[in-house]
Image (cartoon, rainbow, N blue to C red; front, side, top):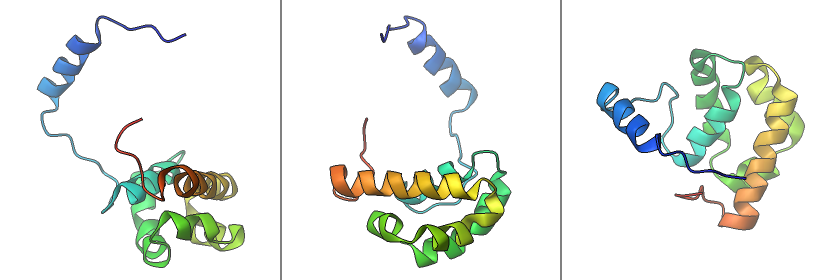
Length: 110
């Protein structure tokens, strides 16, 4: 069961004060690219992810592209990030969900 924590607003204010303009180390140009890069970043450095994503995002541009790519092709594209079979499965599943439930777009809210 979800329980509201009364300290959350104070925590958010403290984080905003400490990091007024946070930056993301993952190179991306769209919410979909950021989501894919985030999945790839599990047990991997941001530097390695940023080396893999240019070719990946040149080949696969939309959620439909990611949903329909063959597992083998996606695994080949992301192999150097490690755990590539699981990551490919998760990326394809996420993309199918986006296509089926959200018109292929990453929603703005949860």
